[in-house]
Image 1 (cartoon, rainbow, N blue to C red):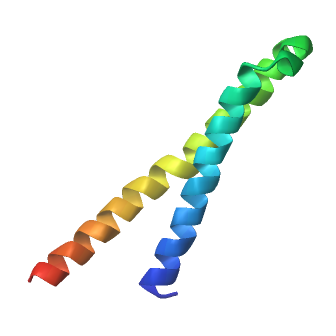
Image 2: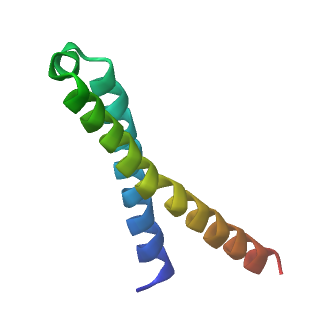
Length: 75
């Protein structure tokens, strides 16, 4: 897999993670989840947790790849 394709896939995964985080925050503040009680809290917290799992390591890896690419260009 080429670097550009890998970066594209990682960006997509990062966007999915950020979307899940935003969905979890929205669900946490919605009236529908309030009606579910503890199950609603678990659903919204699960969305946020999965979103963080997807987004944070991807951001770190993309930062390292982009820093490496910048160093190669400047050398």
